[in-house]
Length: 319
Length: 261
Ligand SMILES: [Zn+2]
Image 1 (cartoon, each protein chain N blue to C red):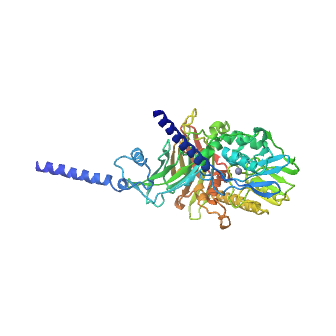
Image 2 (image 1 turned 45 degrees about the vertical axis):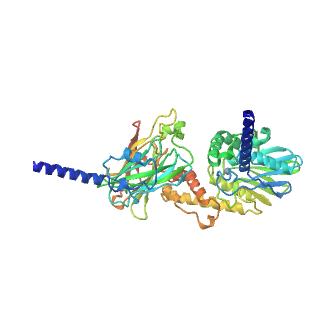
């Protein structure tokens, strides 16, 4: 009697636990829907938001190219769960193995899904690999704070294989690896000459204000010029919708140009940082998603350098 | 006998009056920032008898969200009060609550600076007016990470030692009259809360005109940000051909520079 009741209690407990796990798993579903944009070329477009416990960090675009020689994945997403769900989404489309996973740069939403893939398939520019080694841990901790449970089991896994700029042939796709910088110290863009699709990474944002924690605005502008000169048919930005023309490049350039001029002028006018924060971006940028938050972050990240330049006439030391 | 009793009664009455004054407005006002630490702040920074009121004329500007907790910009402006003599800035939930104390001795009663915060907290300025009343204003700052228990970048690099105390500065004419002085001082500003890194911070800065007439006295505490930047406004009546800043850190290193126009 007592054994039976214990057993039935355990059964109920197990059922309850199973149900709870199922619910939790359903909660942690990113609902990834790859969209075909060209021959064998798929994109997963994230939300134009800030990181949150609601979106689990899925604010980023990832993509993959299916070739007879295997699958090339471009960026692995913000968490282990995202990486695993991306891998399953790929497996639903092709039985070809993932042969290479490229991280376009060292920001957390572009590499924290790496654990889902074979370590030897991971590759990035040398500057990206060293960036992941030096800052990845802090990024990961911060993502746990911002995205919560979605991050469960996520650890930093840096690629071991360094990439160099130049052509890369993969199963008949003639790819061009373009090593740039400006959004971070190492930004990789990938042009598929066979389809005309340009994966621009975070050098290009579309209808979402760019992020600037590691930005060098002058280098970034040069990188944009270079990208605009490539003959592409479609552009996949790091954040925001895919486009068929250079509009996202021009929009990113315009925002960065305004940001640079505004901060330079503010520093030359002797504004305190709190006064710079009170400036409202012009009307043309107000429709960009999260523009207020990104402006605030950019002021914090970039203004001290402008300020330092404006104050750089050192006072005569009376010491 | 009669008279003595009368005096005692009078004393009692005046005590009651004093009592009524000291418990007056401020202490009956609810904290507009609704912080559970306000009671402790009240006890820590103001004598029990002091009159402390919440006053919207004290403006504290800071971002509502500060992603970089090591460098949170704050501006205090008490220009709407008639005669501010002293301003104390503090943050309820910081491990070191006191941030900066300044006396506008001729400068506009306001100051722009940067601070380190460990967690989300009210940042407040208490402004003492000539009548002895403390007027308190403030704002909440939400942080997404702690900045107080991290060592400064400076303390990790040998480079700053050569430049310790170096001042860069510039003076601007203001459209509304008067001038603005901004200065940046090379200093690691270590809180002493990071393991193995002792407290090392600027304790005193005196801003004067070139003749030595005082304009602003700043007493600094550990939470000021590394390589602090200050903004000070000088009213038209006190502008001068040049200015001077001098001071020292808690290790006795002197800071001294001429601020040229
Ligand atoms: Zn990025």
